[in-house]
Length: 116
Image 1 (cartoon, rainbow, N blue to C red):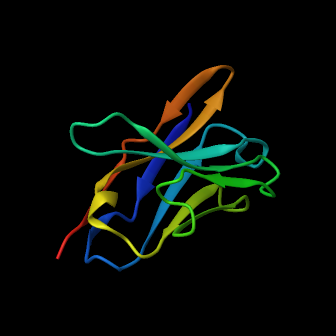
Image 2: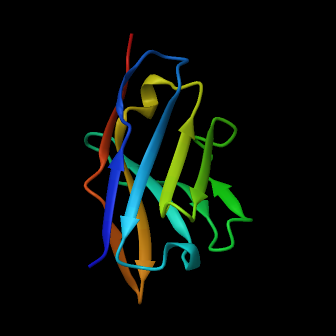
Image 3: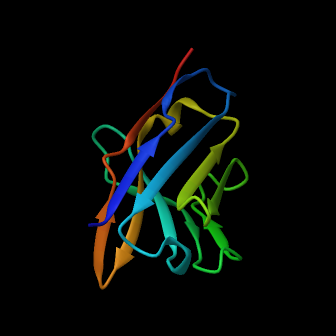
């Protein structure tokens, strides 16, 4: 079955960096576009990054553009999110996502807390 497992979250000071990983199984990773979302406490889930199935096209939400970078390693079936210049407002649970046959699959999420 489809599985998405996020990791790499933690506590980081403002201005710091983190790299999140999403290991996948149960589908052909190299053929699928992938996305990162996040959800802060009391807020709706927010889309933040997209990478195409070719891995040639990326796009970002306004809140993270220029600070975050999405990438994928097809050999490892793993999606990444490099996060730089983190701000307190980046505090959230981060989720990776794939859509297969019209259905959204999600991991369990990884908590990122930006605080001094």
